[in-house]
Image 1 (cartoon, rainbow, N blue to C red):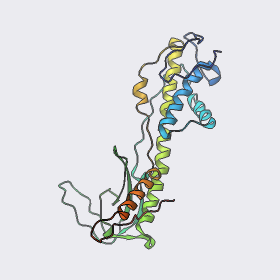
Image 2: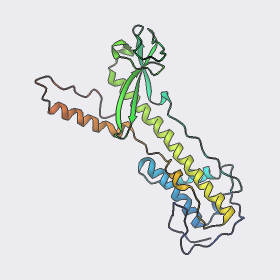
Image 3: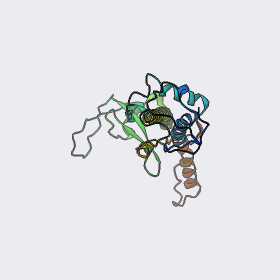
Image 4: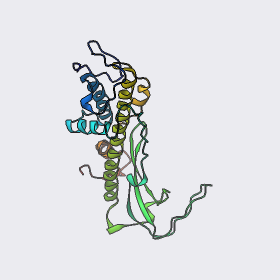
Length: 255
């Protein structure tokens, strides 16, 4: 077994590393050298760091290794995982029903008319270079609608539903992107181990920069909400609208 090497996430070599010959099939973590293990765990550490700027725990590392060799060994080519897009249900909650048939918009595209009694949803949006946080009131076809047409369930205030939508978004987004980054890390590590079987170790593995670029950084509502609350309060405190008070924030900070 080789001595522990400094992790090198680009797959390069380091001095003082014992060379492993090509043709060896690796079937478990225990069959890898210490250098190989360090190289693989460096990839997983980047996946976790990219996601939420944290270091992987010992439990996460153990789970990563179980996933790497789950029904796989280095004699097989790895399969690139499929990226799961965010679903509408991940970012919206049902808030009420439409009180009447809604008028169609002016768009020339064929539209589905929201009818009285159909469910209405609040949908949270997080995205863009500015990491904007916003909400839309929509029908089941994601067509926007005015809250004036919505009968809210249990007469709850609107912010109760926006809060639920943000919690739903954060839970779903964290699970979705954590799974993606981990699957991508496992794929990259399997590529490395398969490459070592074919070419020996150490040997550089090509194409990793483009794969690293596919790792996702998560942006959660709970991280942005204090910023928006502070902004709304600042507008309220510095209002110069001639006596017309600026609207106070309609969402709670602590949830």
